[in-house]
Image 1 (cartoon, one colour):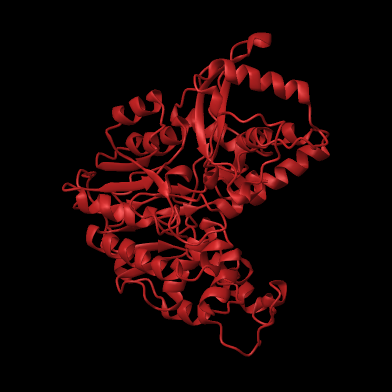
Image 2 (cartoon, helix red, strand yellow):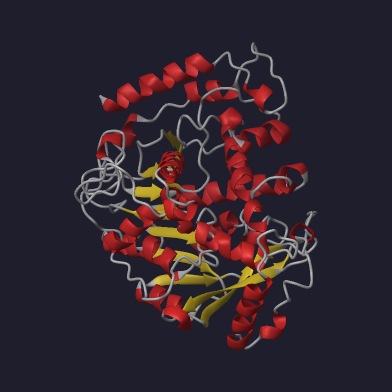
Length: 490
C-alpha cells in the first residue's frame, strides 16, 4: 500500500511538471508539444510478473560473483564492501581491481577475505583530451578510465571459470550489503536488472540529461528518473552481453569529443546507459526496477538532502561548519542513527525499501556523511586504529577530510589563508619520512595548473602520534590527479 501511495505521488508530480519548460533552465528552449522520449519508454517498460514470483530457497552462493573496481581506495572502503558481503554469508567469488600502490595491510585484508585481486596498470591515454598526460587503464587506452571498468569487468568475468551463477557489477567505493543478495527469500536472478534513481532527481535537470541532449539529441523535460550506471545484476551470459554493449557504445561516443571531454565520468557514463534505454537497444531480457523496490537501494538523493539540512541546522545552533559536518542527526533513538519517522530506516538503523522490508544492497551511502559512517563502521565491526584516520580516501570525493588534504597539497601561494611557515613545516615533516622525497615539488615556488596536465599526482600521508608528537607521516600514497573531481582539483 505504501508503495502504491508513493507511486501515486510520483505520477502526480510528473503530471504537474509536464508543462514546465525544464530546458529553459539548461539554456535551450524545447517545444512543449514535443513528445518526451523518456515518457514513451517508461510507458513501454513493464516489470515481468515473474520477477516477483521466484525466490531462492537456500544460501548456496558458491557459483555467484561480485565484480568491481576499488582503485586507490583505502582499507576501510574494502572493509565496508567486502566485509559486509562476507558478513551476510556470501561464499561466492569477489573480483576487485586494485592499485599497484595498495599497501600491505590492505592486501593482507583482501587476501583474508578470499578476494581475487586484479592489479590495474596505468598507461598513457590515446584519445583527444584537454589534459595531454591523461592516464588510462591498460589495455583500454582509448577509453576514459572510469568507463573502462565495463570492459575490464567483462574480461574478468569471462576468465572466471567458477563464476557460472548470478553476477553483481558494483561500485566498490560506495556500496555495502545488508542481506545476502542470493540467500533464502531473495528474488531469483534470471534477467538483467537495472535500477532507477530517485524519482525527484528529474532527468531533464541533470547533467546526464544535458549530455543526452547535446550528444544524442534526446530532449528530456519530464520528471521521469534516469537509470543509475553504478550497478547491475544479471546472469553470467546477460552480464557479459550488457558489459560488452556498454563498451561498444562508449567507443562510439569517444569519437565525439563533446561527449567525453566536457563532463565528469559519473555523469557521462550514466548518459551512455540511458542513451541505450532511450534508443531501445538494451538487451531484451532487461528489467528496469523502480527506486527503492529492487535489490539495490540508491540512497544518494535522500542522503545529500538530509546531510546538508543537518549541517545547516547545527550551524544555526552555533557550530562551525567543520563541527556541523560531524554532528549526529536529530530524532535518533535506540540503535538507529536516523529519525525513524523519515521511514528510510528501521529501529536498528538498517535501510528500508518502499514496502518497509530491509534493503539488500545500499548504494551511495557516503552521501549521509560522517554521522552515518561512524554508525556503519561500528555496526560492521570495523576497527579504527588509534591516532590514525581511516578517511584518507581519494575515491569518496564528497568526504571533507580528503578535500581538505587535497586543497592543502595544491595550496596556491596567493591564497588569502596561506600560512607559509606552517606549510613549510608540514613539507619538511613529509620529506623527512618519505624515502623518495625528491619527487615532491615545493608548493611555494610554483602555481600549478591542474587542467593543463602540469600535475601527475599528489601525495597524501597520515599523521600519527599523540599531542604535540603527532609528527610522524605514514601510509604515504600517490594519488593520480585524474581521479579527482573538478572541485577537488580547484
